[in-house]
Length: 211
Image 1 (cartoon, rainbow, N blue to C red):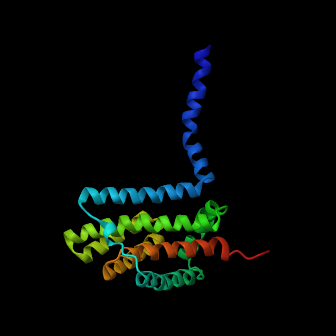
Image 2: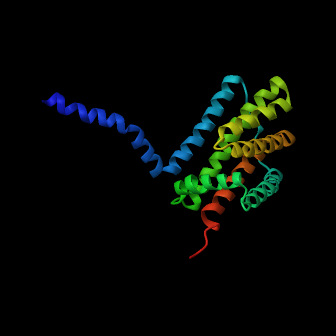
Image 3: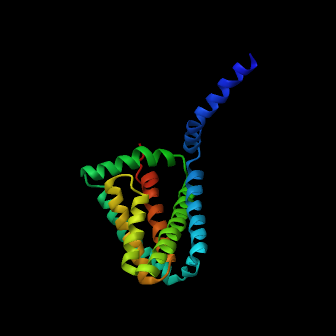
């Protein structure tokens, strides 16, 4: 009798694990986002140590680099905000993804949380895709192949739709080009962070009109 009553809870607990995880992710989206981006940074550093790379040495803080980063962010933010005003089918598909999936996850997040997620996305993703992948491939195959491969992988990592894949590939090309022409990993990190922060903030706060 006791063995028969003990089995169903074990089976139900096992079956409910994915749904519990999904529910937890919905309850704590900011923590999961920060954890994921932090994990990318750790992965980047681990790969750098394995392959003898030192991406942290390519980060040089200066007023000039920060000013250049701000200037380089303006055109891509302007292009994205302008693009979202069009009613093309693929733009509408992107808008639906943002409004149906992204906004609900971050709807209860404050400005500080959005800032933190955007900052970790800039650090984690740029360390991995530019500081490790692009820099490592460049040593083997040259700058053009490195830029193309890192941008393609960056696009594949964000391939929610075909259109979003193309857009993120273009974004990867832009960030990788900035890294190549400046030699300073801080620039793509800062541009990536500023872009994510401004666009997320605009969607979540500035775009909302008072009733």
